[in-house]
Length: 608
Image (tube, rainbow, N blue to C red; front, side, top):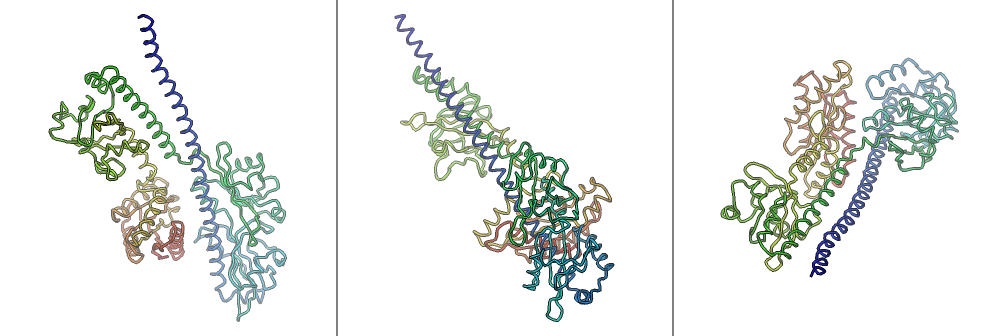
């Protein structure tokens, strides 16, 4: 008898031990899978960031090229220019004054002007007295302008620097007598990239560096010319120590604390002549959704273990005692709500249930007024309802164990959030054990975290990330239902002067105050976002561009009349969505319309 008792005790001890070993093995495997998935998500996040920033840089370069051509066109429209070229009568003071005006009224602070005759001889260079050079053997882009008789833009290296060039033919009596060339640089682009937490080092290739005899920036990394003045010294040292050319042929590099993104710059013939290398610290890349991913799946794992522990306890109890009293004690021991339920109604609950539903002391009292706990479920997207995909909520949870099933319960004006799991207890009686684990604090934290990721911390309105998500969603709706959609992009005029004159604190108050003013004038369905320092954007669903123009004009007048904090004005660009257009395209058109408003004198609305 003693031997049999000993063997039975050993058997009882071995079962929990075996289960613990199995649980630990599964847990370690589960953690490995989560960590690998986290690493994959991190890589995907970096790829998306790289793609976004490359697209942004490409757009900035193209915009500046076109703007440079636009400046050249404005100069070429002067009828006196053709006579100036033919007569070789260059009025240096006139072009110096012209450049000074460009510096005062545009974002371009280093504009150069070059006048070239029909034989491609440079007859005037605004930045040097060294003219008279024949550019024909050096410049394929200029030859193309003469052949096509059309404006062109390019990026090329000359004896001074790597620069962006806009070229327009000068025509007199139907004949091309020369070319007016406007030259701009990469400094304004690198300053703009800093708004996205990217520092820039613009580097000419070693072959192109050899062409430079009078370096504009006088900055070099070994035998590579650096084309932007604001290239940080520590990053130049960083590239020097690691070898500049090691970054030329990579899509991006994760190197220590940095995410490094090289972007090739090509000339008019498609040759790589330089690289725009961007640096951002990896810690600056938002990883809120990765943190939430880890939290969610670890929570699911813990809850799965808790559910397994509860169900295993129930199983052992039924097998060993089959007495309802012990079964009730087990589920009462749980810190989560445990209910035994079916599609026909509650059959049992644990004591924790009444800590939440405080008006009732027994399940009979509860059932006298309610058939199901689902009567307290809030009608909120993303949470369980009584019927899900035409299935009763309990069966739906049971049939979808891998989903993040959550319930939002509203009782006596209190809101609770629960993670919900279900297991079949009795197939014959169709009874389920349903566990509602209180995740109210975690869910509120998650909702607050999600709100923070889409909210601008200064103005309190939506931020650029929310705009990127919302515009894609609204475009999808516009495509599906064929309704109009418009964008308004707006910018505070001369905001730098506000900061310089009154200080950044007043500048911040201006952004906050006028954000509140504009927000109060919009509809509830409109989306108002801050996408830059003093730049905002409004998404207007179901609004065409004529109506959007009226909205923008109303806002412009309200801003001008308000004089809140200090008097300011704003410029506005308005566009309407073109069916089939991508979000980047409509944003670019809106930005171009805003640029036209600025260029036309500010404090006005332009339709793109």
